[in-house]
Image (tube, rainbow, N blue to C red; front, side):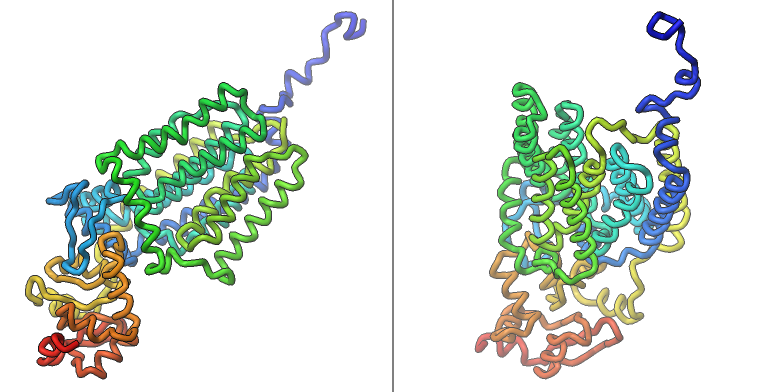
Length: 496
């Protein structure tokens, strides 16, 4: 009797499950060597980030975040913070106070080793976030390849700073909107994520921007019914409102806008070097995304909108180059996935393994950092006794890139410069830039500050200029020098 007549079919389809979502189907589509190579790349990335985290905290900005966190723990108000320098008098509001407080409290409990471990935890979590944001659509090898490229693009900005958490949240937000196109589910949890983000780092408006781009893309794609699309549009609106409900209050909006006026004074906010290798790798990823978008049989305006967002981030500034990379990881993965094809999301065993190796990595770091990262980077032997002995309130001429460490290590000093630009007025930023760059009029500006001690790089143009003005080198080494002004330096400032 034929099957049509009602006879039972042969059993192989039951014994060997080849359904689209089955493990057997997945194992046939995904060769074992690809899984093995993907796992190898992931482990290699874990080793790299562990090496980063196990080293002494070298970025000067890490230390000014620690100092600010200490001030918030002890005496500063979030809505009316103070200043660590008499040379920084701007009215400002904190945009990354929550991780600063966590960093400072961690240091109080566990020292710098604890902060280094926290750094490693964030990096390991960033890796896991990138993996899960792409793995739903791409296989392990493609996913880890995208991760490796994104981490390479972002490497110069992966120091222990709150912006790391922004990079993580960018990937989460982009992946969430890509999944909304796929399953038509509105992800309301993006609103509280933005609320948290607004306390973590000043890049939180990116959440709103990605939401607006996504809603327009979903509308053009006709991916959601009208009523559901209207609900999706409430997510970026709700996110914008949520940002004003943090302890800083609605004034946070103005604080973020004010950052843009200072971008000319900081290299990270400058235009990227388009010949830099990390930017070229980003350009390659962007080209891959563009080609995949063109070749798709089903055009997606959401994908196109996100690609245009990536282009804007890639050319806007160095600070937004990693943002572009974080968006591209889930975007390229989603573009490689054919419409109607079965999902490649990791099965439970794979997720458990991911969790296990992540926990193992941070556990190993907990053992390593007390031996490797419990002190800041080594300084010349004269630095600590010389600077510790300076009287409280001593006005010190320093540089942007050294001020963060100095303000943390020697809180009694009144430093001319440090890297937290929000606390300076535009006039003060210009003054510091003129002095550091030995611009016309720099000498008069320096005299008016009242600084008689300088802690600078020996090879800098300013150090050479000070020597020509009879400043004396008191101590010097390869990386840092202390100079003192001549006795008549301040007497001449009235005539400057």
